[in-house]
Structure formats: C-alpha cells, structure tokens
Image (cartoon, rainbow, N blue to C red):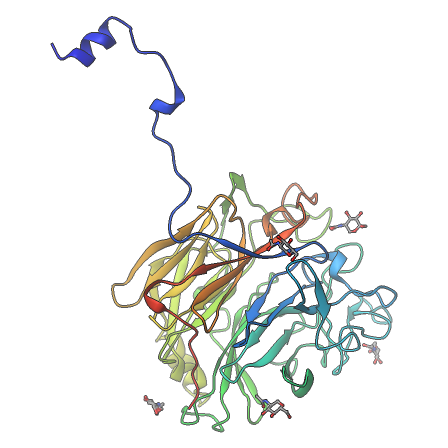
Length: 418
Ligand SMILES: *[C@@H]1O[C@H](CO)[C@@H](O)[C@H](O)[C@H]1NC(C)=O
Ligand SMILES: *[C@@H]1O[C@H](CO)[C@@H](O)[C@H](O)[C@H]1NC(C)=O
Ligand SMILES: *[C@@H]1O[C@H](CO)[C@@H](O)[C@H](O)[C@H]1NC(C)=O
Ligand SMILES: *[C@@H]1O[C@H](CO)[C@@H](O)[C@H](O)[C@H]1NC(C)=O
Ligand SMILES: *[C@@H]1O[C@H](CO)[C@@H](O)[C@H](O)[C@H]1NC(C)=O
C-alpha cells in the first residue's frame, strides 16, 4: 500500500488551506501605478509622444461630474502630477455658461454650446499628436436622469497640444448623433489615399447608447461630413439578458434612480483599428463577442453601402467582457477582461484570445491607450459600483487609478498617417 494512502487511512493529514491549489490572480508583466484620481471620476486616458497625459470625466455617468454653472467641474483635464489634474484645454471650454443642462426645454436637454464642452466620454491623440475631444452633448441631472443632447452639443473638438488651443470643431447633425446617442470612443486614420474620403483622414466612433440606438459613426475630418453604418445591427447591440460579474458582483443596471432594474443596456463601446488600418474592431459592453468590418465598407456611403456593410461584419467569437479597446504595432487587439481582473489580447493571426495581464488591483478596465514608448496605459474606475448599477448606491472608493504595463515584442502606438 502506498504510504500517502496509508497516512490518509490512518487520518494523519492535518487540514491546512496551503494544501489547496489557489487562483494566483496575477499573471503577465507587472503593473506600474501612474496616477491616482482623487477628484472627479475618470473614463478616458491618452498619452502624447512626449508623455503628456489627458483624461476625461463624463457627466453622463456620474452626477458629480456635471457642471451646474455654479461649480468648477471640468470634463477634460491634463494630468499635472501623479495625483492632480488641470482643466484642459482651459477652464473656459469646461465652463458652459449656466451649466451643461438647458432647463428651459421640457424635458431638460444638453446645452447647445459649440464652444464649450458638455459631457465628454473620450479623449484620443491622433497620429499627428492632435488631441480630439469627443463630446456626447449629454449629462446627468442632479436627480440622475441622463438628458438628451441638443445640436451643438455632440461634437469632435481638435486641440493643438503645443499651443493648447482649439483648431477645429466638427458638429454632428441630429441625423447622425441622435438626441439619445452616446458618442463613446473614437479612432483615427489620417492616410491620404483612403477610399471615399477627402484625403484629410477619417474618424470612426461607437454609439453605445443605453437607449438602444447603437451604431458606428464615420467622420471625414477634411469636410466635417459624418454618417452612420450598422444602425441596430446585432453586432452593435447589447446582448439580451446580459449580466457581467466583476469582483464577484453580478452587474444589473438602474437607468435612473427608482427605475426598475434592467439588464446591462450598453451597446457598441470599445473600438480599435487594426495596425494596417484595414479593419475596425468593436464590441458591446453588454456582450462578449468581438466583431470587425473592413474599414472600406464603413467609408462607403453609396446607395448599397449599408447592405454591403452588414454583409461584411465578421464575428471573431468571444473576447471576454470589456469596455475600451486598443491596438499595438504587433497587431494585437487589447480588450479588458473585467470578469477576471485583467486585460485580454486578440491576435488576428491566430484568431485566438489570450490573457495579457491579471492583477487583483484591476477592476473595471475602462480605457486603454498605447504610448509611443511601448506601454499600455489603462484606467480602472470601479464603474460597476456606480449608483447606475444595482442596488443603486454609490459603492466606489476613491482614488480611481491609472496603471501602465510594458507591451510584449516591442509593441508600440499605431500611427496611420503618411
Ligand atoms: C456627490 O457628491 C456629494 C457631495 O460631495 C456626495 O454626498 C455624493 O455621495 C456624491 N455622489 C456620487 C454619486 O458620487
Ligand atoms: C507621487 O509623487 C509624490 C511626490 O513626488 C511621491 O512621493 C509619490 O510616491 C508619488 N506616487 C506615485 C503613486 O507615484
Ligand atoms: C435652451 O433651449 C432654448 C429653447 O430651445 C434655446 O433657445 C436656447 O438656445 C438653449 N440654450 C442652451 C444654452 O442650450
Ligand atoms: C501646433 O501649433 C504649432 C505652433 O503654431 C505648430 O508648429 C504645429 O505644427 C501645430 N501642430 C499640429 C499637429 O498641427
Ligand atoms: C494607401 O497607401 C498605403 C501605403 O502608401 C497602402 O498600403 C494602402 O493599400 C493604400 N490604401 C488604399 C485604400 O489605397
């Protein structure tokens, strides 16, 4: 009889938890803590070639980010030390007179200012290191109700970060940014020879609207013209009955205080351009699948372009649950893996997803940004503990965090420009 069996038979084992295999919860490169957010609640992060960092703070998701006119709330800031932030490009742009909400309309609406920021959900530096600010034009009232936008509010604002001045503003008409659209995230391709464009580059934007009007928006940066594709296609919609689990917590949604609990309603959100610019990847927050489409099909706005676009959507299987996406020069598509405290990486060459990094400090990976010196920066903002998540109380604990990790194989920022 083998001796361990004999020991077991005689009852000589003492119980100790160290004998039981345990999930290490940590893998991949080590996290470096870069910034702690003690003031407003952040989503986006973008890192310039010289290492300057910019974040945004959406009033569409946290009532305490809403500018009421009498407070000094900002919706975009530059990170000025490892724990301080300064309104960007200046306080004026962040201070809509009378606040972000227009109470003279019934119901209240987002203010219509073209030269002030209302509710910014994303900030992204393009391949020329210009900062683009994506304004949803929407904000929460103090009662927690998300107001629809008014024309003038939803816009893409370009800032020269050398002079810290606004150089271009692209307004979205209400036929492109619907009043209940939520312009979520944006990616840029500045190559001159792109089919169907003026030659000054294009932007691709996700509409993650919790009210169901999801789709992909395309913008010609030269003419300022914008249009939509894949409206209400299953690939941009939340998956019915979707319940993600973060840090052991099932996440149900409460669209406004006192409203009945619903399943996660957030559609197409994370977005990434392939390293060669030929494919656009996206996914819903309320969904596990990774989709892509040839970017040429999105730029096409001819009579049959929507049919051709719908016919060109590729389903790459499950990616994990995530919010923002990012790409690097190795061609990987990074997506959060918020159910496993980590970040995943999809390799188009193998068609497979793998875990890039895991760490118990990682909760809700909101936005990722690859820097020119080869790091993946990402914010973790406890989004699943907002009052908009069941049971409806604010369970977040300050500070929110910005980390970075070194990319594998000398991966770096993708710059689509000639
Ligand atoms: C907003 O700020 C007030 C005052 O500091 C605080 O009492 C409240 O809990 C905050 N609410 C949220 C949702 O952060
Ligand atoms: C932030 O900066 C302060 C002062 O330079 C330093 O003491 C602290 O360790 C830094 N914290 C982090 C998280 O880097
Ligand atoms: C508020 O709404 C009224 C009525 O539509 C409009 O005339 C006014 O310009 C709006 N003001 C702002 C700041 O949005
Ligand atoms: C920003 O402004 C500076 C100074 O006018 C100019 O030299 C630079 O080319 C501008 N940057 C971009 C990306 O246009
Ligand atoms: C644009 O030019 C790049 C390189 O100059 C080339 O790789 C790409 O195929 C061209 N794209 C189109 C749409 O012509």
